Length: 104
Image (cartoon, rainbow, N blue to C red; front, top):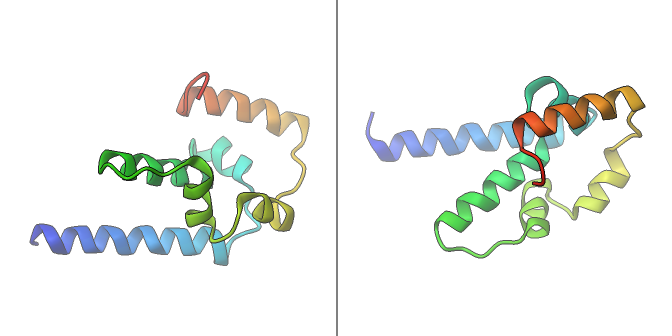
């Protein structure tokens, strides 16, 4: 497989993951994704922002989130996010520190 085809297939797989998380399964909470897998939608938007920065493209956190979510993040939260239990919040703190790092 040539490099361009590989890149196009990777991009298609990313778009399918994004569609799955945003359209097919918006009911799955970010906190559950992070607690189970060590990443969530916000991580994906941050990785998008980091990839842009590597190419010299200035993109803020809010802009990256809006590109990933397809709407402002606060709007997504209002439509889809539910309150997390204290137990889930404690698990999240641990998962965030392990996977994203302290102070990020």
